[in-house]
Structure formats: C-alpha cells, structure tokens
Length: 335
Image (cartoon, rainbow, N blue to C red; front, side, top):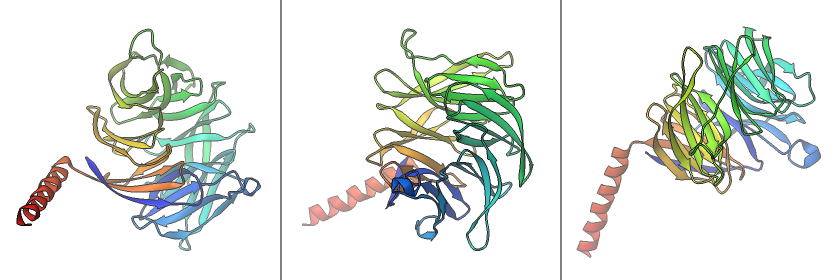
C-alpha cells in the first residue's frame, strides 16, 4: 500500500488521539502552565483538521483516548485515574465519571474490551485493574493485579489480560482472578532476549511488539491454547529501529506501528504481511487511530505534528506510476 498524506503542525507535543465520528480528538501539552505548555484536549474536523474547539485540562493530562461507538463516549486515562466523556451540541466535553487512583501515579493505558462492556487499565503505579460498566456514568472495579513494575501497555480479551512491563517483560494474567498465568518468552536466537514494548489482542490472536539488542523491532503473533500454552506462531521484522507504538484496528485486520525514527508501518494481522512502510516524521510516533472503514489513519508524533493518511492499494499505486511514466515519456518524445 501507499499513503496519500497531509501533515499538520501543532504548538504542543501530541500524547494521544482518536477519531470520533467526523472529528479527531487530540490531547497533548507539557505538564500544565507551570512547565510552559498548557495541557489540552482539542476537537478538530476530520480531513481538514480545522480546529473546532480548544479545551484546557489544567494540570491533568489526558492520554490513551478511545472512542466507544456502542456507548457514544470517549474513554481516557485522565490525571491519576480514568474518565469518560461525552461531547454535547456546543462541542464541550461532559464528564461522565472519574475514578481516581489510590496511588499518587495514574493510569497510562486504558482500553475497552468484551464488546465494550469492560475496561482494563494500567500505568506507572504498577497496578492493572479490570472494570465493568454499570452504566454510562458508573463503573465498578472487578479485579486488581499488583504487578509491582510500571506497566507500559495493557490489553484484554475474554478471560485474559496481557501486559508489557517497563522491565521489558510481558505476561498474561487472568481477567477474572488476577492470577499470573504465563510469562512470554521469545527471541531471534535462544540466547538473545527480546524487550517487549507493547501488546494487543486481535480477533484471533495476541500481537506483541519487541525490540532486540541491535534495536531492530519485531511483531510477533501468539496463539493461546485451551491448556494455557502460549505459542509464537509467526514473527516479522517491522523496523530497523526501536518501536514506539502499536494499535490494532477495530476489525482486528490491521496493525499500525510507529518507530523511533518516525517511520509508520501497517501490517495485515492474519498473515503478518507489511502493506505499508513509510517515513513520516522526524521524531517517534506517539499515537495513531484508524477511521471506521480502515481506509485511512491519523498519526501523532513527538515533533508536534500529525499526519492524516489515506491508504490505497498496490494496484492503484502501480497504475498511477505506469500512467505517469507514459505521460512523461510522451512529452519527452514530443519535445
């Protein structure tokens, strides 16, 4: 695939973004007014990226944005806890609930699962929590898993929670009891350990993103059997540099990956086929999201910019270059 892209520059670093209906929500900043860059949660028109409304979140940083269409709400890590919002007719954010962490540090990753009936969260405090929606305005904590290590990324599906940890390990826990079920082990060679950076479930499997000693990054597909065997089915190198971000589309068919050199990679999850690899930024990608029909994506980066990318097939890309070559050859011959 090839991408048709549009770059937009901002006045603040982007921490997270998501596509909400015909809009794009972007959060970022620099830790509040005390540090010079105010924390923001802004609304932009999808495509044109025209600012619709700017919102200040004060000293509270919002991150890990997720739009849940079935509930028409936005879920986010917010300050020291997690929160949900709706957007009213005036394009103001209406807070539905806020669950503050018992510890002084907050949740870095928040994701819905089980057909958007539950939430999994985890972050700097080294605790993973599983919640259930009681209503739009209320959630109840079901399980708390004390890991003791900062959680880089967490995802859940059915009975399982997978967490990539700051010590570069990765483990699977029970979403029902919180018990640790399995530690993941994978390497290019038996003697070479891989550092796990991120994890995400698809409809059929588990994906993990790892970086090796030479900083090359790999995407691995795992199968979880009924007797709790976790088997690596396939693995591909996706970048020559360290990976920074992994996001699986809602259908589970595509995975978007960001690398530390600013490259964006899109992979088909069933066969682990790279369908797009493009240098887009000068600095690492920090967040990305796919549109509803997965024909386009938007990516935010640490260089204060984002790119809106339309994904087109190899066929049309090849046809474009063939026709361009014919036209150029015609004018060369004519002159």
